[in-house]
Amino acid sequence: MKTRNFLFTSLLALASTVAVNAQTFDIDMLKVQPVYSAENGQGYDIVAAPKAKSNAPFFYSVKVADGNYKVTVVLGSKKKAGKTVVRAENRRLMLDEVSTRKGEFKTFSFVVNKRSPYITDKMNVKIKPREKETFIWDEKLTLEFTGAAPAVKSIKVEPAPAETTTVFLCGNSTVVDQFTEPYASWGQMITRWFGPEVAISNHAESGLTAGSFLASNRLDKVLAMMKKGDYVICEFGHNDQKEKYAGSGAWYNFSYNLKKFIDEVRKKGGNIIFVTPTQRRFFDEATHSKIQETHKDYPDAMRAVAKREDVPVIELHDMTRTFFETLGYENSKKSLVHYPANTYPKQSKALEDNTHFNPYGAYEVAKMVVMGMKQLKLPIVKYLRADWKDFSPAQPDDFKKFVWYPSVNQDVTKPDGN
Image (cartoon, rainbow, N blue to C red; front, side):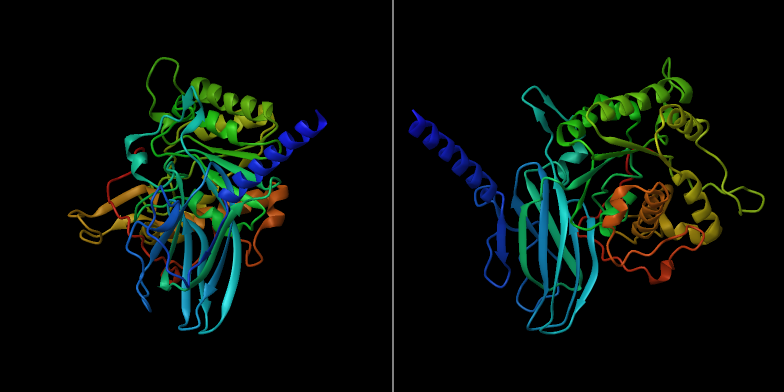
């Protein structure tokens, strides 16, 4: 009987090892790699594989289950100097441009969170039709290699350690991993600043309110993935203020929904943090020097719930006001989706969006969120990368010096919400 039990235990251990190994990929990019298919489970994806000596961007995908994955990339080439940017999933920035001399190699590790709509056999996330076209909810973990001269020697994808801290993001179009140029949000830029001890899992989606986030089972998905000690960060308000049904409003329905987030996250042993909504670029008509309030009572309602329930708050509402006013009436357009006609394919009219950020604006707002984390003295800030430098929205980075390589995915259709 003992022998049988030992054999059964050994088989379970072997099955567990095989399952883990099945989620591990060690890819030598100097060798010929396949084109991705669900059957082979890895390969070049989205665009054609790069040709020899090409500086064209490329994608590489691996088929993995939901979870956090440590990705280790060795960047560089024996044949050319490299300038490589690494993104994951929906243009989630993992590495700013890395320069390597000919024959020089640099190694970096980071964690990518992958998920599907599945929660249980009886429950899935209710994703929008447009989300089905993105890389967020599919079977794959997708990496994008771009820059002036992408140079990649190897890629390793393996399950992240169980102790990896996950930060779950809940919110709307100002938080979501925007899929297409020229839109971007702080949730897909904050990944740039954390080392491999922290994973960012962005569950935000354009057009959502706190209520519709809950109704589409997105918090259920977060709770299914999180462990004790993880973080849940919530930014709502932009779309909530447009709800007009009976019982809606900042002080009742919005506050009630925020309390649901608090109770459910704490029940699972998580740490919840509120983020007040980003400002809209709405300057006063007289002097064009001061941002006018457009969010009504919603920021104050969030603050009131936070105070009553002892929830830490990151004041993005105040920081983005300072940011816009520092840039000024004209230059603040450089942080948002303001582009002349014909800047992007199928764009016959000028884009003048005063809510949604472009990559520069999203990059700056992500830095504000990190500073908010530092001000709250969250333990995870000890895992900020060595090149992090403290930031003030009153002294933003020069937009003229900001470099962003547009992704192949471009669509000027405005995201849901405003």
